[in-house]
Image 1 (cartoon, rainbow, N blue to C red):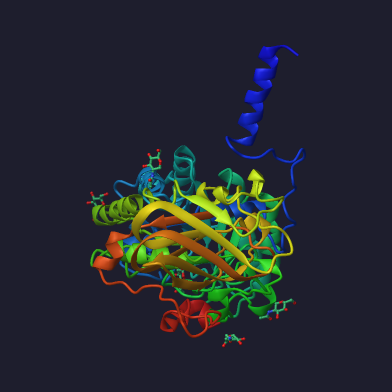
Image 2 (tube, rainbow, N blue to C red):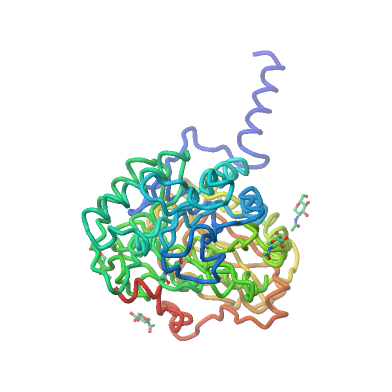
Length: 515
Ligand SMILES: *[C@@H]1O[C@H](CO)[C@@H](O)[C@H](O)[C@H]1NC(C)=O
Ligand SMILES: *[C@@H]1O[C@H](CO)[C@@H](O)[C@H](O)[C@H]1NC(C)=O
Ligand SMILES: *[C@@H]1O[C@H](CO)[C@@H](O)[C@H](O)[C@H]1NC(C)=O
Ligand SMILES: *[C@@H]1O[C@H](CO)[C@@H](O)[C@H](O)[C@H]1NC(C)=O
Ligand SMILES: *[C@@H]1O[C@H](CO)[C@@H](O)[C@H](O)[C@H]1NC(C)=O
């Protein structure tokens, strides 16, 4: 063997092993088995998109109402400057991975020219009756590289056959077919079970779901009871502190949920049905000249309690009667984006060194090394050696650092595992617990009073199977403290208790609650 080749081999060896690391085993260690249930491809894409922008728009925008009667003259629909490109840009720039439009709200007015009704944009003066809001938004979303979702209200206060079960289910499925065959990929179909109090109507959900899945292979269907994502159970955008994606669909039906169950999910759940948190930036779902948007700091708080609790946040930002998102809403969304950028662009653990009580395949095995948790991806993770009874990770931040926010993530493609955990920091030579929590899931954001520390320990206290950790981030949020928001306090009583926040908000969607 020539010297050059030998040197090359040594060099290659160093490259493969990393400097100073002992030789790795000749063959790789396979990943551990997943723990069922696990997400589908579409559910994973949904979760990775983190936030969706909800667009409530239609005749209500022009008549200053929330629930149209179904008898507004189509001539009222006359936005002077509608620009779906603006909606999609606002979404993409604000970090929303998808945009969901009310293609038809309870008033029955269709924002696309449906062949099955004369109550649509085709009967309005907008674009001379040749307009198609769904078509314009679908093109705009594609141009911005974000997903499209559509809401087709089951309740229809205009359609004459509403109330005739067979005829209306045929009508509804006909409209659904138009929406899912004319506009390319649709990533989400958003359904509630809204019904009029005065009309008997039986919705054939199973047939609807089968049709939707048949026409769109990347779609997730949202409803009170899944099948793909579940309503969190309130319209405040807030999930339970304990929030499992596993869930039993049989425990709820559309229109009959148990708010506590929907907010916290089910450690023993047999199906993967993660929660989606809906809330409006304004008091109403539709735009009203008299209403103002929430502040950016309020949105940040909602973000912590939705995205930061293993959910997707669907934030409604209703366009005004010109057909544009108002300046004041854009201002708030820009501040919200800037605040998140400020906080999350400084991860104090980015250059930390991590060690763990054990590593799958041996302490020197880089495939499942603790350092994987410092990379922002759920596809590389720390895995412990099998058969352990305690799981600990230690992080050295390199120097004493002030922080008040922690981000934890599990590789959910392997199932949701962590039941309970706690975090200690070294303060004045003593390890002190700064927080205790239940469930991590895709993403958990945890706030606590600021500490100055260099060393941090994560203990997983119980898990459904060997815990896997994909990401650990350490941040400083200077915004929430200044506004006196509540903290995630360690509960010194019993950390496995499910703490439900704001029970009062759990009254539910009025129409579904009265079904
Ligand atoms: C969900 O299903 C599992 C498995 O059948 C069961 O153990 C668990 O108790 C169920 N949860 C509820 C709330 O019924
Ligand atoms: C709608 O918002 C745009 C800004 O995007 C603004 O120029 C316009 O005046 C607003 N229209 C109404 C009716 O408030
Ligand atoms: C981590 O290291 C990179 C590259 O040396 C540096 O740019 C960054 O500021 C460091 N981050 C922290 C939080 O120390
Ligand atoms: C904590 O609460 C859970 C659920 O209520 C209970 O099963 C457990 O025994 C409690 N643990 C302690 C230490 O009180
Ligand atoms: C239910 O909530 C959706 C959005 O979350 C809203 O569009 C709809 O109007 C609500 N239904 C009723 C009847 O309040």
